[in-house]
Length: 143
Image (tube, rainbow, N blue to C red; front, side):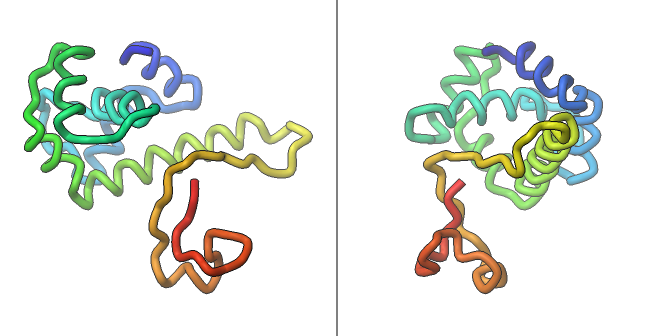
């Protein structure tokens, strides 16, 4: 997979590069053009999430190796560990899921289950609605 393939896949679900940039600006994630643009960040996060432990050092090395972009691990930390980045990723995820469901609305399936080993801590306000597991004892959501 490369950045071009990711852009092509996003375009198939209606997320053009321009739309991704607009989402990032609307979320205040990207305020000006930098080496780390939203498409490159998505590519690196998706590529880095496959199979191995995540670290900002590894992300920095992959940026050099895969994209020929030199970005320090501190810059990645600053960019990723902020509320605008979280809002941007939520917008991307909801856009992709919404487009995917709209494209596949004629399928015979009643629902789509996504299985992954990632555990996301659910807010306490959602625990009364959905605990994340069948027995109701966990406060984490497994995606």
